[in-house]
Image: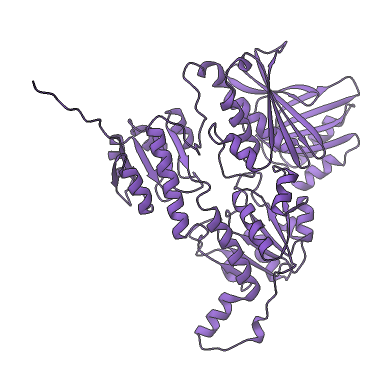
Length: 534
């Protein structure tokens, strides 16, 4: 009798950009792995249909066209932090999981930040260059010590926390701004939490460690620099665009900033960047993650996740939608967008230092496993400060790492909606709550604190203003936006009663400038005014 032995067919994975050999070895032990570098888009398009997995770094652009041609694709791995070169939306539509490696280079980025700071203090690149040219010069390069100096860290995620630990070791005074960590966690890091304005005013060194988003773009610009000491030194090893390069160059040349160290730029390669023209800046070509250890770490992290997805398991750092069982997707799937929108809004409306997060599931959604919705809430809540995408695998870990208490409540009913998701955050200054639901196939924000409204977070800017309801106030605000040539595309008003407390929500086609927002805040009977991006 002949017995036919069948071998299970191994999935195929294409590595299209250089990654560390450890990652390739790991993938090769599980899948048939091909390494084809520097593929042109047409070449990748031609062969991608043969593969279940694709691994890239930043060089290869994974467009919607390539994703749609990948008929077998199950997972796309980005060996690094950002996913700007991957069309995540197109992948999500196709049910393809996108994973990245947001923590593999944390130590390398932190160490590069410290190296840049020390090089800045002791003029090491300039002294080296002069001596290599045959010039022995000492008096020109008198530096400063970092001991007892104050370093201000904007963003205390993986990298920011690692910088804080190293700064403490250098006997520096460490202050930080990050509303999305607990005071207890900051205390463990030996970081004194302050407001962003206080950080700008007190710091001798300022380093930024947040993702680049509309809310964080130009987080350091002309207005912020004006608040700083003239002896301040600014460091950016995170993302180009966090520090306004034109404003920084001007301040350096005018002596309003003593020095800067920059590793990342708005356009790369940065051969013609304005900062190259300043002698007060140390520049490196995006080397924050360029260590042997970091490259190995991101390659192994990415390979492990690609293997997990191909084995039908969840990935630690899935970038796109958390996984929901197919039988529950019709019920819970529509509320993923609601959860993200509610988390995103409450994070921008809340003030003070975050202490706890309460998630309430009312109606039908509360009868099921809501782990994916919890992950989506935390993802929307933390996206301003964290490169690490939150999913159902790492949600608890991310919250715990930041010292945040997350409490879920189920079993309530809603008189108006089939299901209602409410997030309340308790901070050092009070509580803020936002409720959302799904209607007509799209998310709706239906309550903010005590006010019932109906706002569709379709993208763009919204003005949220707490005020006393009185004739003419809305018209006055509209007049301010009109003079600035900013169009209002929607308007909502929630109020407790005539001429009582009310909430105005204006949808705007463009962002208000800080002076415009200040003008609205100073209007009689306006209590608060905040611009949010949804």
